[in-house]
Amino acid sequence: MTDQAVFPRLASLAGRLVTARGWKRLGLAALAGALATLSLPPLHALPLLWVAFPALVWLLRGSDRPKTDFTIGLAFAIGHHVPGLYWISAALFTDIGRFWFMLPASLLGLPAVLGLFLGVGTVAYGWARRRWGLTGWVEAAGLALAWVAVEYARGHMFTGFPWNLIGYGWVPVLPVLQTVSVIGIYGLSLLTVLAAALPATLVATKPSWRPALAGLLGLALLAGWGGWRMAGQGLGDVPDVRLRIVQPNIPQALKWKEEAKINNLRRLIDMSGAEGWDRVTHVIWPETAVPYFLSSDSDNPDQAPLTRLLTQIAPPGGALITGANRLATNEAGDYIYFNSLFALTQGGTVVASFDKAHLVPFGEYLPLRGLLPKGVKAVAAAADFSAGPGPRAVSLPGAPAASPLICYEVIFPGAVMPREGERPHWLLNLTNDAWYGQTAGPHQHFAITAVRAVEEGVPLVRAANTGISGVIDAYGRVRGALPLGDSGNLDISLPQRAETVPLYADYGDAVPVVIWLALLLGIAAFRPRPT
Image (cartoon, rainbow, N blue to C red; front, side, top):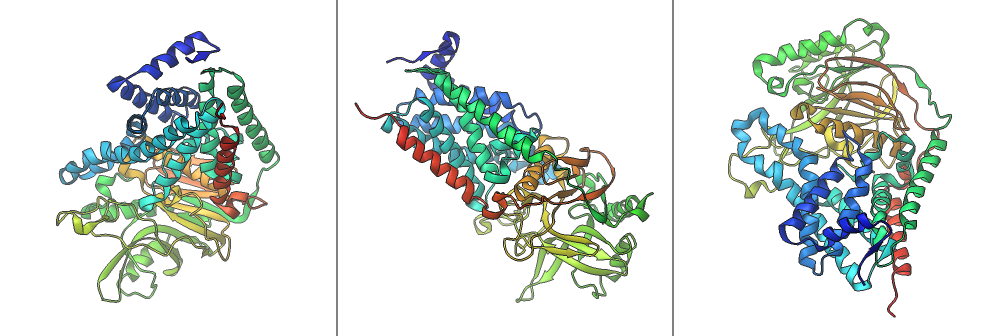
């Protein structure tokens, strides 16, 4: 039986997608993937998901074999990730003479690798659709299951890269965003793709508008619950804590030049000591703001002049919190390097430190170094960095304990807080997005931090070299921010954390996995039966 529709024009469009072949089909899949990208930061054009995912359903409906399923998924993913991740290539232009050969890999290679994940997912979906004759809402639900399984896989395999998950499109819609406090970002992605794919049932052998309406009503219910959760939750401030976040806006091309280092450091010190310094308790600098090696040993005579210089800007009773590289030696006596955070008090004392644990592949270290040509180096490091022990609570003078996160450590759901011992009051993210200039990357990075705050029920403080720096409360509300590309200070209080610990913070990804399994059981129960 041929597909029918509630709306004849929609049926005509769906028919063209179902019957498309060859390069035309792949081009349409890539276009649909690009439309899905526009739902993400910085545009947040969410209604386009209700175009992209029905189109993907209809394209796959026209496939009759796994190879076609795979190429459709691959094309959709490449169309999705090239415009979503193009900004990664911007990092290479800080030294394009040395890294020009990596441009194709960063611009097209990474999207293609990520596309392999979706290709496998659409093969599994296509097999289930044909094997069990999935139609109606279960056809859309099958795609949602496949999509989120793919998101979860790419977020965990090969160190993981959970960037631009579909649920991040909801960041400006705070009532819906509250859902992540229960089911996390993967759960929100699952419900989003399900709701967005359900309009495909408007064109089917038994067309119906009810599933599409149910999807919208479901999102409305989530928004209603989220609005209720936020109602009356003003969240006061932590008493006697006043932060000064410093955004120096130092171009990456100048950041490590030997002749510019001392001027960059003086710039940070001058900005930190500007009017109002006597009213703040903590000064916060970005990742690697100090362009020299620091040690956690306060008595190290080699760094004593540097720490004395730095701690003159540490407020009395508080601290200067900064990023810097740390040099150490291993058991064999070889030098090892860490991307670290330090808290320094007046008098030159290092009272706390933290080493970045989740390093950036090809940026801070080279995977499979033994297989690469000799002399090839990571983009952001002269030598491979070593990894720290992972999330932990760091005690700071004059402030509640924090969980530090350096750069893209903040992108990993469920892995930003220690799961044993003291629960930190806030997340502290130091980053340097100067690599990516005025692209979508820093906007996406900032949006991701808002989701971590809601998932964990704690405020998040972010200091970024070129922006976006800011403070986000436990409900995802931006208390204050410095725009991308601006230079300045943000003097702001530290918000209180949520009164209750969110379900997701307690159970992590076990919650979205349960939702995924429940939907899978629903498909098994309601799939069409042989006649």
